[in-house]
Image (cartoon, rainbow, N blue to C red; front, top):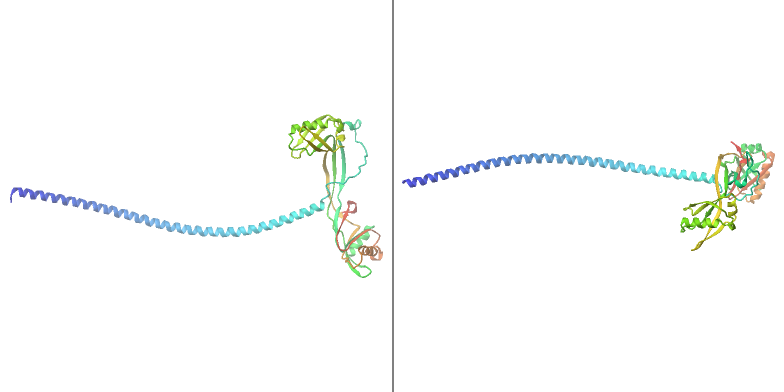
Length: 367
């Protein structure tokens, strides 16, 4: 074997030794990579196990929360139903209270517009220096005493009997049952006190201005300053009873104004003519003039009592006679002392319909 061939073999050996070394290195690298992969796999499996455990816990929590929510929802629906029932009951109570208030208001209601009544002048208030000078007085004052009548609904088969003496009425009430002879037959009637509601009495204090008047029905489209000029010009004229004006105040919402004159007494002349025509360059409009009145209530009192001389008779049915005939027979029966009766001042019997009777304060005796 020659030298060259030996060198060639040595080089080839060295080459394969290097190849083996490289292969072993690659093997070591692969082993290391496998170890890293196994470690990552274990970490991933641990993490997956934890995630699955957390998922189970979350599912359990969600299940519990759903159960709690459903329980709360059921309680809410139950409470809602109870609240609806409570609201219905409260609404019924409110309606009942309102109906009662309306009933009480209707019983105590009186006519707002009092009828015209002649007033008698009695005296003039005086000052320390003597008689008050009416020319310098700003207001004409009045004081009125009002007492409401107490209504009582008299229904069919009932009668109201007012006796002259209180003791007779009380004896009739005490007896309670009465066999009343109505010619064709006898009916059993029951006597009771008259159940009356309360009444009202109060004082109305009125002050009618001698310097101020109210002007109503002003046009809303005319500017206030223009209206002021037109009103001052019109009501300054003596031919309408006017005079010098101190002030003009407007109430835009009510479409009215208050005119204050300088001299007392002018207002009384102006209001004698209720309708006044105001003219301007464009059109003409009519206004209404009325007194400027201030009023207030004092000494409002509620009174009640018992009609001591009046008896309510019930159970007197219609026996086929005329209403007036039955009323006369009732009156005859209760006038007889043998029936416990006495002199009758007034009587009212109703057979079928109903009528309203009114009691005044002087008819009552305080409870």
